[in-house]
Amino acid sequence: MKKKWATVLIATLLVVSFSVIAATAAGSPGSEDDPVVTKSYVDDKIASLSQGGTSAATYKAISVEAGQTLLGKEGTEIILRSGEATALDNGTNGISDVTAGTDLWSGNAVAANHLLLVPREDGRGIKAKTIIWVMVRGGYTIQ
Image (cartoon, rainbow, N blue to C red):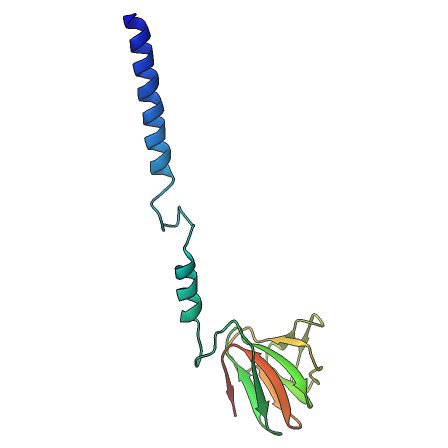
């Protein structure tokens, strides 16, 4: 009888010990070891990406006058919707035309409805030959 109780006690202690070890290894809530996050945390992070009251996750329609340039910041996406524009490179690398899978160099025509990606804030963007309308997501300056 004593052997039976001793066996049950040892088995119970082992189960409890392994449970404590497993819980400790899982990490504390919210740490890098526990990547589960709440909706409010995600909403706060998205709100922190806001640029000028517009979420960075949305496109903004803007007009650019003929002769002006739109220079993108790092990660900016540009879609030419109407008008004629040419690409501006940084002298070393082109602007990525993601739709065509190519780089556009200064002077290359920008095709309508193609997604352009500015990888760095280093002078890349587009120059309007006529009045253009573009959709932009991310930071930019117009000169």
